[in-house]
Amino acid sequence: MELSEMFAGREAMIAEMQSRLTQVAAAEGLPLTTRSRTYNSRRAQELGKWAEAQGMGEQFHHAVYRAYFVDGINIGLIDELISIATSVGLPPDEARTVLELRNYASAVDADWQRSREMRITAVPTHLYEGKRVAGFGAYDDFVRLIGKK
Image (cartoon, rainbow, N blue to C red; front, side, top):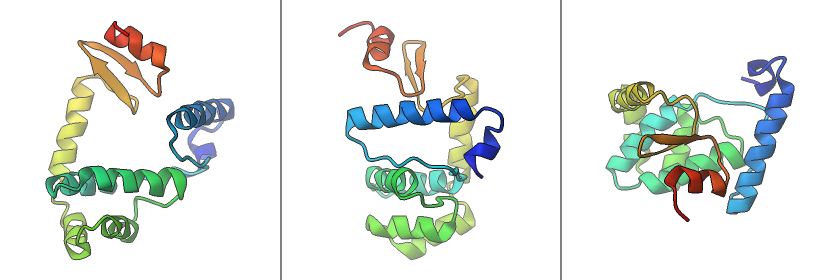
């Protein structure tokens, strides 16, 4: 879906979000490309759960980040996800089976349920002792969250 469709009438909000994201990424040394589309990440989440179970979660999550935020790849497509999994050394046949059988759907459902119970509505959300910072907060936001430097 085009971001302009998703946020119709709120174009200033899109520009503000992308500006903030660009600033945070630059400060952290993360690669980032301005994007105009968003893709459904549900399958990527399911495959990520499987990758974690294989001991390859971190590598897979980094590769999905790069695919989505740098290369603009549609991470909602099974073939793209299999390519990403393969790029980090996960077996493509197993990845396809996991996606087709939805083996990790219930694990992702449980994560989403927990998020609803915790009233998390933004990604990322950082929680500490009952307090939260939603979105890409500045360093001072985290100092306030944790209460120490």
